[in-house]
Length: 125
Figure 1 (tube, rainbow, N blue to C red):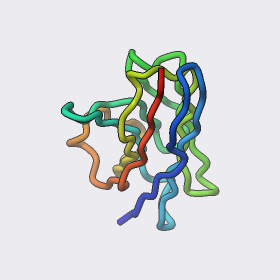
Figure 2 (cartoon, rainbow, N blue to C red; figure 1 turned 90 degrees about the horizontal axis):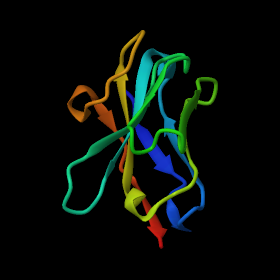
Figure 3 (cartoon, rainbow, N blue to C red; figure 1 turned 180 degrees about the vertical axis):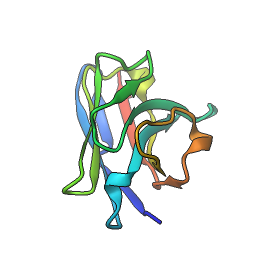
């Protein structure tokens, strides 16, 4: 089992940057594929980015491709989401998620077993 704690959210102006962190408990972090999702008020939770166990394979939603970067440091049990060129439509609660999977990643929320509590990102225009 793994517990996830996100941090790094906040209020930023359009065009600005933030880096979210997700710290995981447990000694087997490197066995987990990790994902970032977001949920805006009145909308369903949507996929943002995912990374496989080693960090060598990543995937992004079209809406964030070229602006966001997902990475992980298995020595620190942490996954990151670097967000550049933020837009008001990026405003949402951002969640990290984990699933024990070697070799790939998932892009749908239902595939992930573990979730953090979320961190609010607000982008003002």
